[in-house]
Figure 1 (spheres, rainbow, N blue to C red):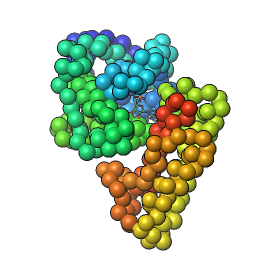
Figure 2: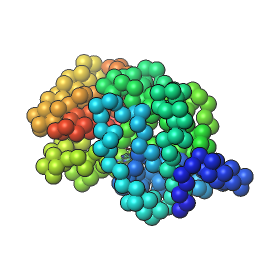
Figure 3: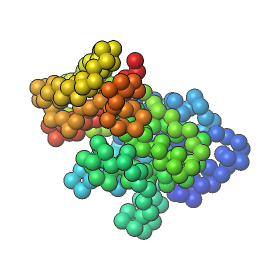
Length: 287
Ligand code: AMP
């Protein structure tokens, strides 16, 4: 695996791949890689000739009171894991390559509506930071395919919209959520949890599965008001387990809008705090 630190080195490498007619796959990450990230590399590997991963803890997608400075950074383990899982190039950009005049003076990419609701409403500016850095990384890596985890479902839709609207000729692929044995979706933030909290957080996946069962039952029954009731009950389930939910919702899986009474393409979404750690998870519902 080649490790690249500068935009100019990456440019030369990418130009060579393109000249040789090799298809490029790209997996952007913030590092502290786990089996979920590695599955994205494997998925890219199946579809392209060369896989580029980036590790960049992007300051602009963290709010002022969020965990940017204490976000776990494990460069040695990340490098080993990527090499072992078939990554060809690891791009470790410098902040100055991404934000030449500093983040405040950077051109910004913003995805209206989709980027403003749910996570975007609770974390203002978060998806501007994500869309901007991913647009820049797309320009630097020039991929044919880019793989994102379904784990960050709203992010996946934001990237799809950004890519379509800005005309990137990139196939955006969604990778299934990789989970711990108790159902907890793998996340770099899970390491903030104590053993007890980790066990407690299993209720998130259980609640999503319960929401799916209830939503399918109400679709079968043609019950119009049921979706909101399901959300309210799901919230209560999370609270009863000692979590502090920000939301537990059923939404249109294509645009995250409020579902119609007979909406069939649904996604159940949960964001909840366990102690001071905020976790998100989701489950697609396909009747
Ligand atoms: P992050 O490093 O957290 O920004 O995540 C980088 C990529 O890995 C994103 O596309 C995430 O959605 C994806 N990802 C994170 N956790 C998981 C997981 N448990 N399963 C699948 N993909 C994941």
